[in-house]
Amino acid sequence: MTLTWIKENSPRWDADKQRIFSPAELAATGLGEPRPGEPVADEWWRVTDGAEVAGYGWLDTEWGDARITFVVAPGQRGRGVGAFILEHLEDEAAARGLNYIYNVVPGSHPDGAWIRNWLSMHGFHEASRGQLRRQVATQITR
Image: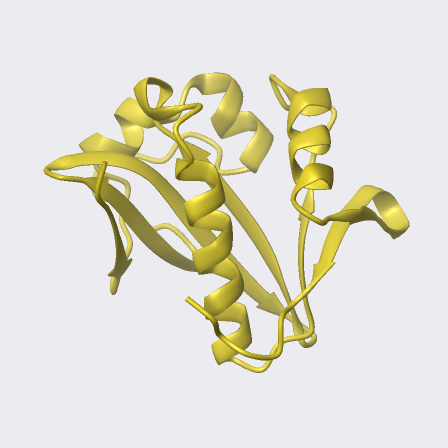
């Protein structure tokens, strides 16, 4: 498996995003139901494994921190793609001089307990308002 991190300069809803996001995942991320070609907010990166899209990560900078969200293609789950995305999102936050990366897992998330546990295993701690946060490493090491 060779994963590649690719910045989307003008992110739009496309066939690959449509294929990867189930309706429940869309609801959990708050993306609604974008139409094909419609712009999507925030900064997005596509992760590929060869020619196949393996997942997406995005971040929204707020008050010196970054809210992060990511999704892994169903056929790629359990292969380290989520950790790859998380590491690269932290690198992006560090490059911007941000303090924390955080995620809010809504009650509507299809695997909320699992993802909260997964984030905890990757150094995130429960913070206010249900946020799971991790301090950004001050030096990019990847």
